Amino acid sequence: MKGKKIFKIIGSILGILLLVFGFLVAYTYYLMHYSLLPNEGEYKQDAHYINPEISILNDDFKVCDKNHVYQYYNQSETLPYFSGKNGFRDYINKGYENRNYSDSGYFNIRFIINCEGKAGRFITHENNLDLEPQSFNSDLKKQLTNLTTNVKQWHPVYLHDKKRDAYMYISYRIENGEITEIIP
Figure 1 (cartoon, rainbow, N blue to C red):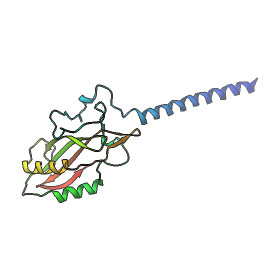
Figure 2: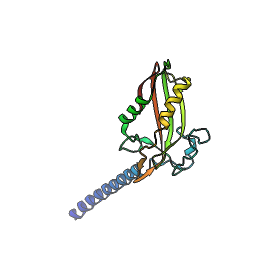
Figure 3: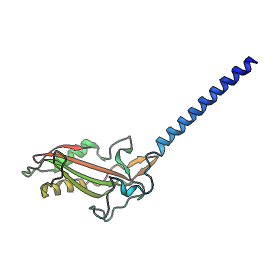
Figure 4: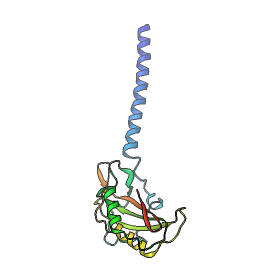
């Protein structure tokens, strides 16, 4: 009789532990496969949304899935730079010429990289070093925008075993007309 009671208690404990373990496995699976997917209806309200009506260089640009545009950091493998971050930095530094600019601040370019590795829907933001809105020299803006938009191939985001569309940004930190940092 005592043996049956101990067996029932051990069985109950093992059953509860098995249920808890199953729940943890299911929750982990959800986090890894579904928690990064945007919800329907949130896309246009997200802070990172780029309106195709006001962006530049999107005449021939198409996203592969207009309902799901991810963030570039949703993948763990690499940044989207086709020749790597150092290759991109070298490309910008070779092409950029400080024409006696006195500007300082952050020149930010946001865009989308589609599942084919093509970029489009570019939009720019300008801030001083205290992150307050400001305007840069128009030639400096044109030069950095042209260098960035002339990159023809990017690594698309690879998420859930599929190439996906993703938002990307490049922020140029500029001090007295010199590029001191490229983020990310």
